[in-house]
Length: 229
Image 1 (cartoon, helix red, strand yellow):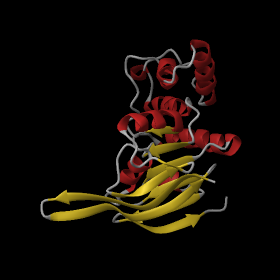
Image 2 (cartoon, helix red, strand yellow):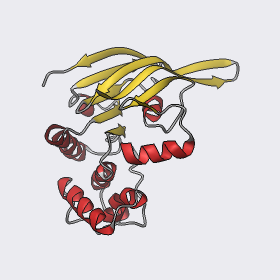
Image 3 (spheres, rainbow, N blue to C red):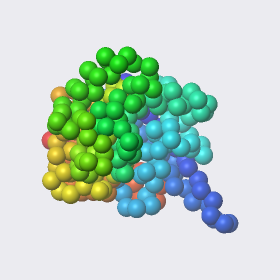
Image 4 (cartoon, rainbow, N blue to C red):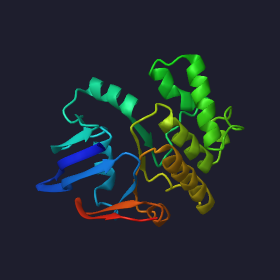
């Protein structure tokens, strides 16, 4: 069964008298355990598509299904609850809470889910260890490098045990060494734990690690390629 399925997605923006289809009749499925990249030049619609898949934006028409549950059309409150329980996000700008420590940032999603303090502490420490930050857990974002902050963001995305991770340009602000480290960690999680990752990127370093590449141009899916590693 697919973890996510899109059917005839269209997202239209109006600029003056012109209408632009940022996403133009897009349909595909992603299975559990995939390591997939959505790529294309700036303006190709990949970030808009990722936001629709994650329930952060609504399509003009079309449908999104997660584990066969349609999320298009859900009320805002139901959508917030669904995202909290089912989808992990990693953003280009990290989006960590600056006044919280790494441990508190990772545990915040579980706090919102009503998990006990003991459960939050156990899961948070396990995740920070898995991304190589067990010694940094009491540091705040401003005390960490960009690469370290993005690894905290990955740990936070995994905290709720989501169905899949959506990562929007996660390496855009990282140097080569930090990018390799981050991708090594995510690839290991994918291979050993079966965690599903879906990237939106034009970073060739990320594309080279993908096992499936969905290429977009002018809002359209122009190729869908599976890569044997």
